[in-house]
Length: 119
Image (cartoon, rainbow, N blue to C red):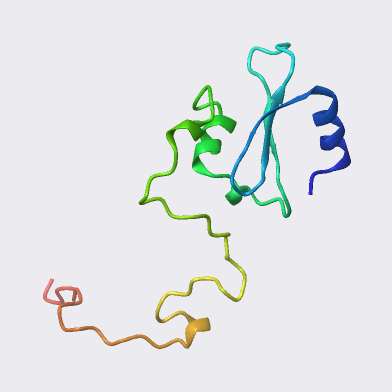
């Protein structure tokens, strides 16, 4: 949820540019009082930066002059997944202490380096 100050600033100076499929709203300043206009997002629900889609991320960071929504999503693009680090659903690689601490033995294609003791 946005702070009261952000909501007031948006109400007074903001101009709605668009929304993403998740319901996040993207704004810019109405006036051109700066060489580079401010751009910001008001999240629907929990404020989490990873919820900004790539099309809008480029616009927010002044990489593109307009949102890339017109291009549309490609069939190979995955839908958003929240950052699960620190939660019970976080990814733990095989052998991680919290994932049991066991992993499969090496398959024999690994040869450890051994220093030459004759020197």
